[in-house]
Image 1 (cartoon, rainbow, N blue to C red):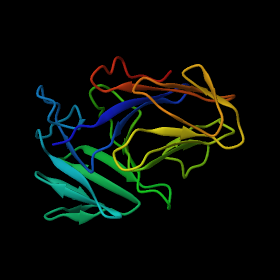
Image 2 (cartoon, helix red, strand yellow):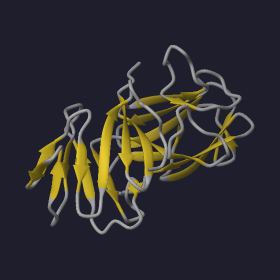
Image 3 (spheres, rainbow, N blue to C red):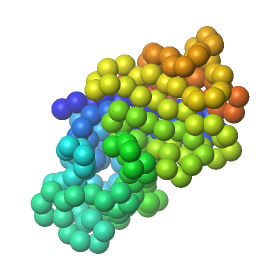
Image 4 (cartoon, one colour):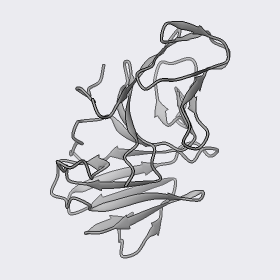
Length: 206
């Protein structure tokens, strides 16, 4: 199982868990780190899986689960805005907001929280868009500009912002810049940081 994950901190917006793998496991927190999205709730360790396959996402349930109110008994195709129900109380909203990107977002729609707590889970493919538009993978109210993180396959992440000057790790950037595992990106109206999942620290809205 792959656990390629990192934290994406967006100042003034929140902290997001970014999952890079094509398949993620959702379930109760486990000491052996076998769960990609650990939720503090009455769930099994490997309750369900969201899997990216080709240009679509599938929802697979190992325990009681429903998709848009229907019991999931076999892998089910996820629409761009779907409601996932795990067990009797946990609800997650799956969103694939940008029509030209396979990246998606999971939001807790019930009162439950992840461990550590997050503002949302991002299922990253090759492009992540942060900005004020509702089609962004991370919606950032108050931003005037759009920041794009991108990569090729499993290569390193880069960033770009059109028509605006910004810095990466204290260095002025023209065009694009490669990101490190602890990079900080600062622009005229945005500031974000990357942090390895192995040292998540305290996830909270800044």
